[in-house]
Image (cartoon, rainbow, N blue to C red):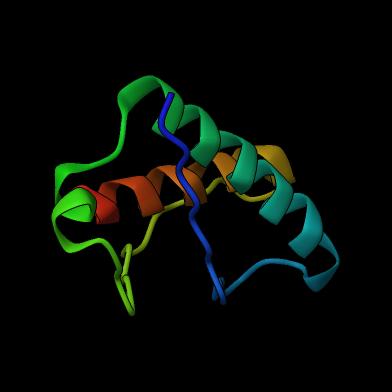
Length: 84
């Protein structure tokens, strides 16, 4: 089994309560781990090895969404960004 180490130094999110930041981050970490485990490492990341900056774009969330759902969307956006 190959070990993957992914370090996200800074994650910038606008429009969310500051108090939710740790819950969102934890949920994003769990979902990104799941995506990498189930779908594998994106080919673009394997080829480049390191990405200095990644813009994963925007996503829409319903008003009042839970931190878990927000974290899932963040992780999915990051994974899509890595797959470009």
